[in-house]
Image 1 (cartoon, one colour):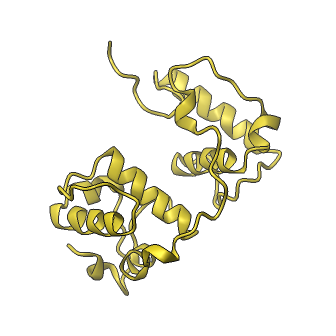
Image 2: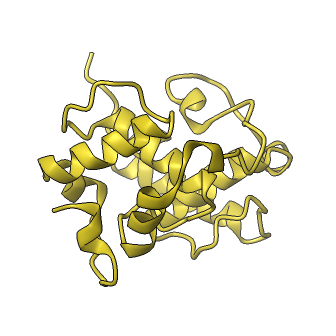
Image 3: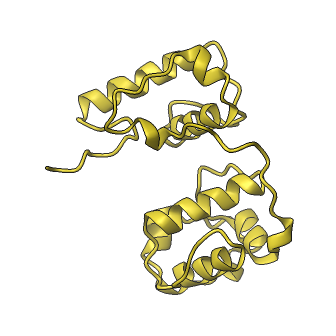
Amino acid sequence: MRLQDFLGTDLKYSIQQISQDDELSRQIQSRLVDLGLLDSPVDGLFGPKSTAAFQKFQELVNLVQLWDLDAQIAKKLIETRREDLTPSTPKASVRLQNFVGTDLKYDVAQIDNDLELSRQIQIRLINLGLLDPPADGILAKSQPQHCTSFRSICDARNLDISGRKPPKN
């Protein structure tokens, strides 16, 4: 499969589906390298670094599609030039990953004051089906309840704050 195969269709691929398609993985990686979002090599292994670069691309072009690949994202990947990319929001001083394995805690007011962190949380909640789009970085009054639901899900499934199984020691 190639990016061009998505154009004009309703086809959607998850990150997992992308990672299982060597040709598509290589083409996306190549575009992300060209755009300065991913370091070489282009190896067809669509792992955490490729996924993060793919997600960053979507953020930079203001596409929040739950990080699936569809016709709109494929078109943007094909057409976007490096000079077209400018950060839409300032970089967050704290990212969700900074909380994993630490005692770092933020209250709702602190999260609300960090637009990018709020957006990251919203995107994670959207991906888990706990919140409806858009991920605009503005916490609504009901969203702390969604965060509590997320925390309960993580605790019940023995997941870390990122929603993943913690590494075995």
